[in-house]
Image 1 (tube, rainbow, N blue to C red):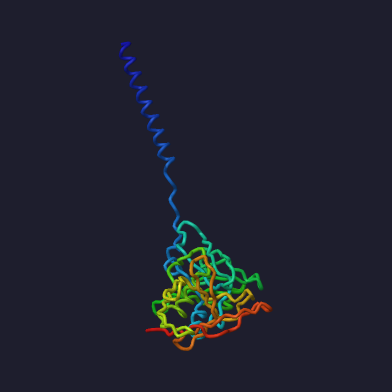
Image 2: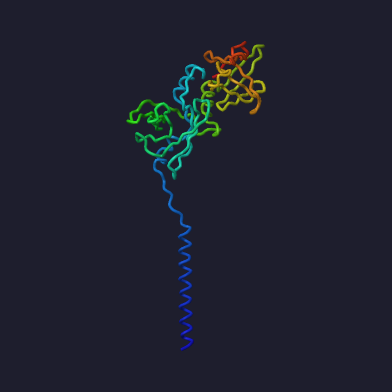
Amino acid sequence: MKYIFYAVLFVFLLEGCHSTINKDRQVDNAAVVKPKTTINPLAQKFEPFLKGVWIPSKYIADIERTKSPLASQLAEVSCFYVSALPSNNDSLHIGYSLGNHEGADFILFLKQGQNLTSLKTSLVDYDTRSNFYDLGYKIKDGDTSLFIYHYNKQNKLLDSVGYTRVANRATDENDVAWGIQFITNKKLMAGRYAAIDSLGSSMDINFTNEGKVSGFHEFKNYEVLTDFSSGIEDNMDQVGFYQSDMGKAQWFAYKFNLDTLNLYEALKNDKNDSISQGKLKYKLVKQK
């Protein structure tokens, strides 16, 4: 009888141990279960339309018409880049070029704007604080355009600025004005040229959208002046050429005459920090 008692006691204790272990396992398993991520449906809806590098449509039309960044107009929000929208968050910081002179950012809220294809933003109307801005998209003939909509406190649309996507992503994501330089290069300079200098020597020169140049002496890169807000030597259209990424540029004043790009000496006037046009140095004829 004594042996039977101990056997029953052993089985009871063994079952208790198994029960405790199973409970511990259940607790451990519960501890590692992660809460489900909430997917914001607006992120999924808007991302395909908003992603990319955006430039004011009017600026693109202007530089095609005038062949002059100086004569063209940029909106205050002059370039911005939208990356992937956060599916598990309710906002995204977007860096933008402010008047093509300095950098800033605004918040894009993943909250419905004034219409089904727009979202709320943190952009501020400093003249009338009660006004506000939305960012939205429109599709026409298969092409997507973005618009920054400006509303008053009665939700009345005051004005809007349209934007065109110039690239799917920025090569230099730290440069909020990258898109301005890219589209200016593409519309004005990019291409192959037969060139001749003031001494009669000929060259075959090639400019890329990304600011690379080949066939022009030892120059490797070029930069078209697009920021005319400094007040220092920014009174003329100019293009600078670099022998290296970190080198000093040699600047020329330039003018287009149909398919001919003329490069002139850029003469500095230290008295009023301005530039004047000097002698013609190079004539470049674009090749088709």
